[in-house]
Amino acid sequence: MEIILDKGTHASSVRACVNRRGQWHNLDYYKILSDASRYQTVKAFDKSKNELNCIISNMLKQKDLHYQKGTLNSIQNILEKRVEKIYQEAYDRGRDNYFDNLFNDDDLWSNMMQEWGKGTGYKNRISSHTEQWFLNQDHDTFDKENSEKLNLMWQELLVEINNLIGNEN
Image (tube, rainbow, N blue to C red; front, top):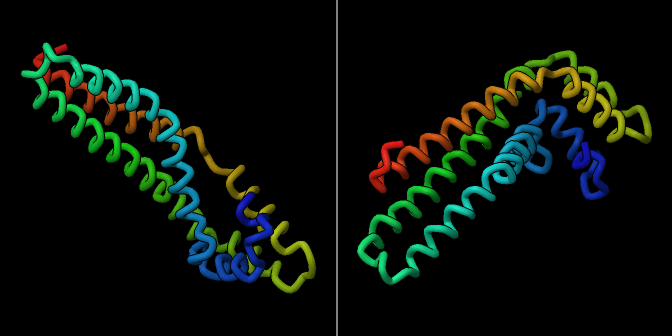
């Protein structure tokens, strides 16, 4: 809603987006959803990732662990790659969760298309329609499924790291 109402977002871009069911290069609902999902996931996982990286970096500096340098570097590389996969999964899920329902909601897009030409406040009316649509969605199911999937990916990463260091717990 903030992006729609932003002074830098032109009404013509909002109209183009509405006419294309949420997909316009200057305003793309699905990209915004993907970005938001990725952002929230980064916020949730970044602290743990950074703490693990810090521990590994400290271990790499210890002279008595020089013989483990290859393993530690491998762990660091795996950590970066797997966490990026988690972030990409969140990005994809942000779009995929809403795309079918949003794109195919003929009533929503028809109602928003009819707002053009009704005078000032076009962006406010589109924002209001959009907000109402999202308020009516079942976010709890998505959030639960999303959290479970991303946490499972994190747990798989930890198992992989444990296997690398020879810890089977």
